[in-house]
Each structure stands twice: as C-alpha cells, then as structure tokens.
Amino acid sequence: MSAAQHAATSMADGDQDSSRPWSVEVRRTPAGAPDVTAAERLAADLRVGLAQDPPSIPPKWFYDDKGSLLFDEITRLEEYYPTRTEEAILRSSADEIAALSEAATLVELGAGYSRKTRLLLEALTSGGRELLYVPLDVAEEPLRDTAVRVVAAHPTVEVRALVADFEDDLRPLPGEGAPRLVAFLGSTIGNLLPDDRAAFLSRLCNAMDPGDALLLGADLVKDPGRLVAAYDDARGVTAAFNKNVVDVLARELGADLDPDDFDHVAVWNADAERIEMRLRARRDLTVRIDALDLDWSLPAGSEVLTETSHKFRVEGVQAELRAAGLTPVRTWTDEADDFSLTLARREA
Ligand SMILES: C[S@@+](CC[C@H](N)C(=O)[O-])C[C@H]1O[C@@H](n2cnc3c(N)ncnc32)[C@H](O)[C@@H]1O
Image 1: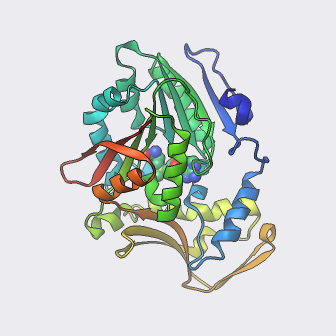
Image 2 (image 1 turned 135 degrees about the vertical axis):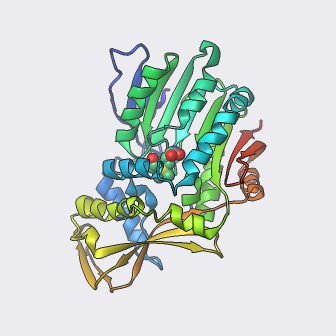
C-alpha cells in the first residue's frame, strides 16, 4: 500500500509541464489517526506547554509561511554560521555519503527550503541515476517551492513532498525495497529535549529498514559569545522570527496577543549546553485564549520558552545514535569543529 493510499488526507499537484512528477501530500500520522486542524493541534500543545515551568511553546509553531521565510533569511545572516558550515561539509562529503548510502530514496526531515540538499541530490543522481526525493516538513509552502525547483534542476529526481510532523510515527517511509538515506540537517535535532530526542531517534530507526542510513547534522559546543550572536543577530531577524509565534497564536487561537508586548531573549544555558530563545513580557499581560478556556497571566518580565537549541559533542551524537539502534559509520566536521555531520546505518 502506498503512503498516499495509507495516510494522505489530501494530495495535490503533479506538475503536468515538468518532465518528472512531483506532489505535496498532507500526511496524517500515525496512519489512521483522526484528522485534526492546526488550531486543535496548537491548542493541545499549549495545554501541555503552558503548564510547564517555564511555560513553553514547541518550536514547530514558528514555521508558518512568514516564519519559514524568516528562517530562510536567518540562514544567510553573517552571525548564523551553522548553515554555511554544514553546507561546506556537505560540499566536500556528498560524494562519499552517496557512495556509502547507495540510496535510491532521499527522505529529508524538517527540509524547509532544502537549499543545501542540492549537494546531496547532485551526488545521489550522478551518472544519471534516478532518485525519489521526499522532503517532509510541517510547513507546506517551502515544500511546494522546493518541489518546483528540484524537478526543474534535477531531471532524474521525482519529488514526493510530505506535510507531516517528524515526531509522529513515520511508518511507512516512502521508497520501500531499495536503500534510503534519511537526512536531518540544520541541527534541528537540537530543538528536541534529550528524552524527546531519544524517543524520536528510536521511532525513526524503527521506521527505517535494515541498510537504510541516517545523515544527522549537529551543531557543536563552542564559544558562548558566538552561539548567542547566532540567535540574536544585529539586524533583528531572529527577534522577528521568535516574535512571529505570537502572531501564530493570535491567528490560530483568536488570542488577544501582540508581538510588540514581548522582547526577544537568547541565552546560553551552560549546564544543559543549549541556547534558549525566550519571549519576555514587556508589561503585565492577561491573555484570553478561548480555545483553551484560559485567562493566561504573564506578569511583566516573565518569560515563555520558545526554542531550545542543544549543542553537541561528536561522541555524544554517536552515543545517542547507538542507543537508538543506529550504527555510526562516519562523522565529518569542519576545520574549526563548529558543526558535524554523522552518517549512521540501521543494521539488519
Ligand atoms: C531549523 S529549520 C532547518 C531547515 C533546513 N533543514 C536547514 O537545514 O536549513 C527546521 C525545519 O524543520 C521544520 N520542523 C520543525 N519542527 C518540525 C516537526 N515537528 N515536524 C516536521 N517539520 C518540522 C520547520 O518547519 C523547518 O523547516
């Protein structure tokens, strides 16, 4: 049974004009789960998150159309070294990754605009090989943009994009019967708390077949000054990205919230080895959220945690992969050891 038959709630768009097909499916995961609206999912996440200390909002809610574009802008900022560093590592390692994985399908989790992925697509299709590319993201607009660009630039690539949550059970992964490479780039893994990360990696390993490989991008521990600057740039693009979640809450839940009532805060938590992005209330706020039947009180100065970005050590990444059932094959880093890419295989 195909993923589309199994789990799609809607499907669109094979482009009739391009030589290769592409599609964007909204995939309900786990398969057979009841269809819920974005507002219902956000309300459920907030019910859990706002009861925590400090109150928190899962970072996936940053990425509406505007948030996705703002993140794309962040990746080009001078202060934001992770994207260009990971891209440089990919440029020198993509051929080896392709040879080691022998993949006929590339699944990319949290793909966004898939800019760096071009290097993997080129390596995996060298010599005219055919490839199924499955970018997966909660944000639909970047996937549509990617699908059009990729089929135009890579004549032997078929794109089947999935709008889905990578924290759900991803079975069945498209591309059964031939080796897959699952790419999880940008150190998005760092946005998961340690227990959630372990659960995510185990679920992913279970969704992979023996012989499939995972390529994991992980940002490494470094000078806190550089880290904080990467999350609090001089032009204020990251601040706008952070505050965009306030607009998402207001729009999706009808909450009476204004981004101007918050300051963007980025701090290095040395004990947990993570950057924390927070929103700090500029004044006493009481926010009515009808969807939660909640009057949410935020005294001036109180903070909401909107993103944790864990920084890693190579041994730690490899240990977490092993604990999930994946065997590290090779790790690449840049000269300054700012960023790492690890290829790990699911053994038989
Ligand atoms: C930090 S960005 C990385 C984008 C891109 N992979 C890169 O390396 O530049 C995180 C991406 O993951 C997506 N994302 C975040 N949480 C997600 C989730 N739970 N399920 C699926 N996609 C998610 C976001 O929409 C965004 O495109």
